Image (cartoon, helix red, strand yellow):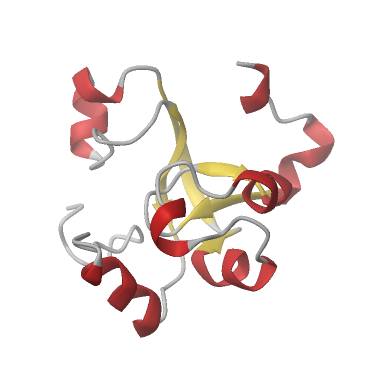
Length: 120
């Protein structure tokens, strides 16, 4: 689990994926991509895409050990994702191009900033 540890001096480098809301450092997104969305949006090694598909502005943190059985994961639409740390709200918007990629891959994109009304 040490790979999820973020030293205090790196907390200002945290970003949240605007698709799945997982929170990681920018370096981890750059090195490993998004563990939930990588096959679709391809963040690994692409700083432009990381800047476009992740946000430094997010609220709340949820740590999920077993998303499949967690009511919090269901409430936040995280039940099909890997265990990890997630933001409850992510500020930012994806480009129409990225939303198109998601839809072409069968992913129904719901903004994580609460603007869809589904979070209420």
